[in-house]
Amino acid sequence: MKIIEIPAGWPADEGAALAVQEELRGRLVLGEEGPEAGTGHVTGLDVAYDDERDLVAAAAVVLDARTLEVVEEATAVGRVSFPYVPGLLAFREIPTVVAALDRLSADPGVLVCDGYGLAHPRRFGLASHLGVLTGLPSIGVAKNPFTFTYEQPGPERGAFGDLVADGETVGRALRTRAGVKPVYVSVGHRVSLDRACAHTLHLSPRYRLPETTRHADALCRRALAEALAATEQEAAEGATTGRDA
Image (tube, rainbow, N blue to C red; front, side, top):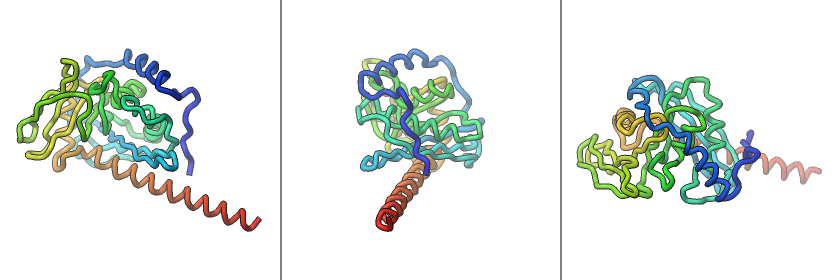
């Protein structure tokens, strides 16, 4: 099992990470509509952690945007690359997520992150960070609210309420299933908010969460379990070798 190491020069403290975040935020592209929903590819991204062993597993799952069938999937396992600091969580996982993306041969199309883009204290969450680093259009679809206020959308599928932070609309609480609590959609990079919501609804024909997130969540959990099993086996073999010596 190959573990992705933390890249040389990766920010090691809050001050360094904030400086990088501020610099990259200046590269955000917010004026593009982005690809139409149901066209090309969409790629779900998610991670699973084992903090005890300092490991993070990332999954990238490419779907045909029209049929929602899986085209390709890839995983990577790496070291957790940054301490837990609210607002800087992207720095904990991005090296491993990018490694998983790099293992794909298919065009990822639109990146769909289990997290936020503009709906972030400094308007630069994981979806925005990954979009800028890769140059790909990206959106964030989060399970839980974060640093904003919003009105509950109507009960019907497709209803939404604006996410507002400091008087600015930074996303939408979007109802993907009638009578079920909403998801929280925000622009990442090179996609409009209307188009981000259209993608989210198209990707959620049966469940609250998009199919991209559902596939990536299952895959990263499986990858982490396999990595932990391999780590335990290596440790057991090492102990046996040591006794034999």
